[in-house]
Length: 452
Image 1: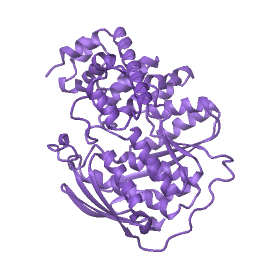
Image 2: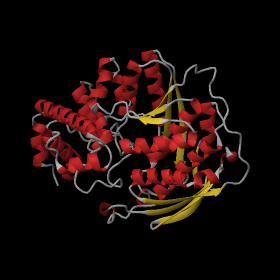
Image 3: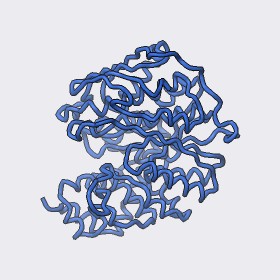
Image 4: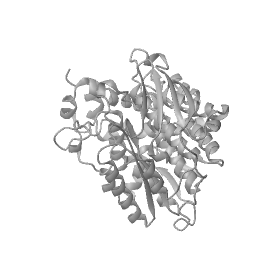
């Protein structure tokens, strides 16, 4: 793969630079080919490098916090070396790239393509013909709770092999993913192979100089899944985000921009990736959300029902993971991801040791009053939606902010899909209502607030 090296340049108001793979960042593209037992076509190789360039430029172009609430916060110019510049410069393809990156990041991108040094290669070699009599289920697998529970749900209801794709960057993520996939394969008696691709910055700047939201990481992850599907002959890339997470209704007004609210599993992003990767592969490849009609608790219930509750404890959800502090509390317990995780586990009847969290929001009034007031905002937002916004949601009377998000961002495209969203939100509200019945002190303690 181009001797493992390519370069790109980027420019934004908050930074600029010319970066070279191996020196400034690493993506294990050789390992990707080895995992796929395939030589990638020039266009698939280009897609991997374009996605990595976008991811790195995103991380190194810090947003202006004063502008992020007003809409697109960054204008980013990117020039990437590619093997097939004529293809990428064609207006439909270039527009598809810019549309998907603009959408997932919430910014304005100008992407140009320059010829790479060296010759191109033959199109593509046969893939796993002796190992896969039929195309496998290709899925994105992060090692999180949704990934594990979603894949378990699919394995329970389908036949055939699985090719799980991971872009790993966290300490221990590679080992954790392999352990989870081994447990799932053994339990359901299925062949599960994995494509583990390391993506990292070399000598990354300190956190205060980076854009920590990493809104373009889903584009890199999805691109790797598309490459695996194209190489393996699979018709789709599956993403096991639950329906509430995929909708991701903003917790408060002003969070509609992707800079404040992730769109990595948004149905519109899935449609855009389907169009882009299908064009690159020369055949239809669809990005699917098999768990889109289910709440997180409904997906996680599979683990409880199938005797895999222990697998849940081996997953990670916290946005701050790993917290790099002494002791077992590697998750904060109060970010939105931790709140949604714990709600799902409790509602699904999966027990989890509260000691893994710095703060235990289900530990009763005394535990909650020990949480700094500012850290309670995600929990308050979830309770507000569950007890005020979502129970009042119906097809005839939808709160304006919710309707604006569902229709305006392309989640609900007709009356039927809008009603399906409404039904899902109602089920999620019911789960919280039942949960508050189990923990009556939860809402009153939160409303009272913790210490300043």
